[in-house]
Length: 324
Ligand code: ASP
Image (cartoon, rainbow, N blue to C red; front, top):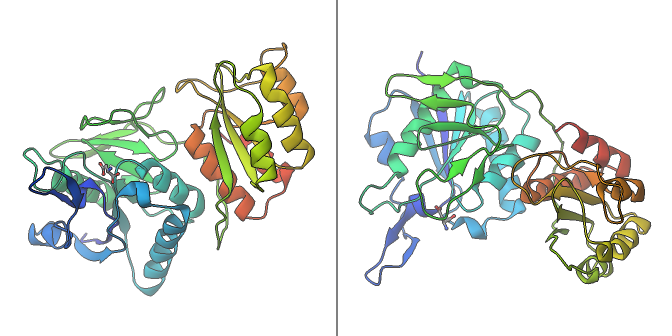
């Protein structure tokens, strides 16, 4: 059956061209606009250019705008799926934002490109077509927001950009893709078990993400409290530990009821309260640190920002991170 898809462009390399000096930048007119319709793929496409931004310019406010655009379009007309083209640098963050905040079982698929529209071997149009095929597949329903590049299907929750320039950059460390796309079919071999959902209408900005390192002190944590940050995510060491010199900062934040969420800076595995030494996970848990099991720092930061924006208190925030 013919389907109607909403195709939203937001910018990124997929919409960029190279100038005479060799610099890759957004084209005045998005070279992708109209290209997909011209190819005469099976589906009816409603094509919207929401922004034309490099993805380092994308903020949580833009992500909220996309969520509202999808909801508004779905209210006004019947759509069977959504494809969003996006710069790859922050693509995983927009995908996870939408995964946490959209309440729909229709397929929502993000894609991008590592090579600009006019580069030899450009992966843009191929990735968009693949994403459209995934968004049109009945099997893609109810799997959360998906990321499709290089013929692989990843969940928003697990996918991350792993390489600066390789077209195979998007990987889901530890879990792998949940499906693949071949010339003939869209194949799923896994489905996500857990999803967390928040209702939000507005978004704040002030959640800090700090990477923990050997010899780190408490200065930036104390600054975060004094500067009015609403929450702090720490990318801790190993199974979820910090140097003892970070403890005074954590204590200050917790005493001021500012949530401190801990992930591991290892990109495989889960942060857990295991070690009993000073600064070890056991002590952090006793001090009131919330463990975000298995999320990356940037995704835990978005979830904390969204949870605070949804009005959740400390217990609700802690509960929301238990689902992972
Ligand atoms: N810097 C680019 C961006 O994220 C990279 C890309 O799109 O691949 O906008």
